Length: 166
Image (cartoon, rainbow, N blue to C red; front, side, top):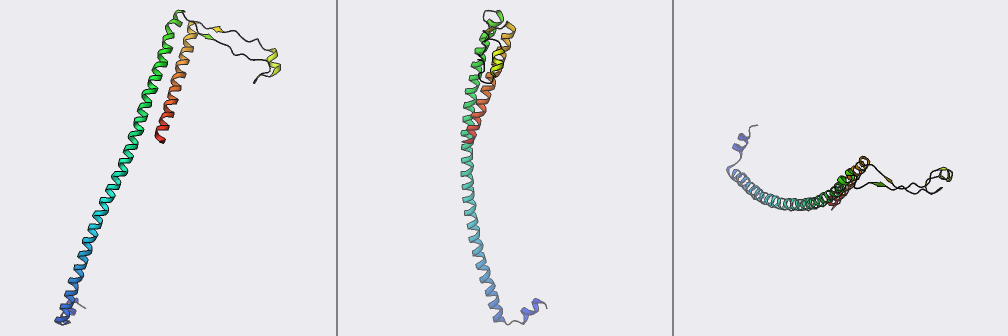
């Protein structure tokens, strides 16, 4: 059945009622559309505001962490520089023989600590301090510099972890 034939069979007053109903429905739908668009605009504005607030808080936290890491980096770099300068101040005197690197032997009492009594009794007496030659002294200073650098790196990493956790 053709819809146009159906309309043709409806009386003119009924057509007016149908057209009037369609106009009323379209008016209601138009008002609902306007309300929905207004609500959407308000929602988008609130979402943007909340998003910018959250982003601002993230940025502030990141800036605080970056500042803490930068301050730690300055401190640890200065510590490393000071340690290297102190060690380097001993290099020339050790190389020339004006200073000697002295290794102090530890005391190992018989049967004390991890040393069994039988091994301790048969062992050597406590050794006296040993002075190293210039080349050996330089190696000790190299080791001391490497240890100092590693200690500063460890403290810097600990500072970094602490700054990120805040």
